[in-house]
Image (cartoon, rainbow, N blue to C red; front, top):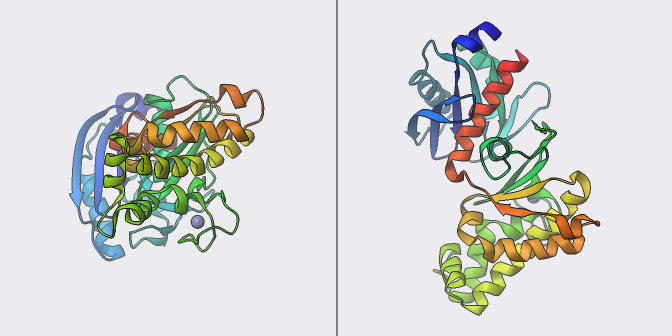
Length: 303
Ligand SMILES: [Zn+2]
């Protein structure tokens, strides 16, 4: 496999979502050299697997040494089996074994938010750091953790840490989880409360950026929930920095990050109460594809 890696410097990364599958040819530095997109991967497991195969085969040639997947799912440790994907009909399937058999290449599979964290560590806001925690604030909230330059291979479901005991119910069955309090949906709810039934998080953020006090305050409350979670994780992992990405996180920017930083400092143990860093992600929507490629390279090294 080492000889092949030298001769074949690319992997195929797949960023798998409910509405589209992005595939890319990724080099060892995490740069995308070719890209392909498939919309609406399908309503059945069979359809999705066929779409994944098409996404791979579109880019597969002799230069490809491994394949990496970023999947919106928690995974069984050690096997990488997909347990239950969000917004995709994939359940209890060993995607790595299936793809290894099909293509005869090493295959890595990881949670989509974890691969984004790996991407930000390698090529984005966390370049040069050893330890990083990342939150992705989108429709839901995800996260990933890099420790000593390696992706933490636990669930890292940072959206489901409790920030308000007994708080509002989360889709997972728990209460007061970060995902309920700091996702785009939380922004939608706050917008409807303030501006009526047609308002959404986009409007809330627009109003916040133009200085509307009520919007600024609502986004600050969201940031404070995020900050409570960041402070707790800083006290466990002492990361060099915390990166915040995702569509909602990127759009809200400092309206959420500023209050998050303050709240995190209130919770963090010294000296992190003064030194902790909370910064925006840099790779945007590219993080999923870059990170999936990097997971492919990890699989290649381990093979
Ligand atoms: Zn939850």
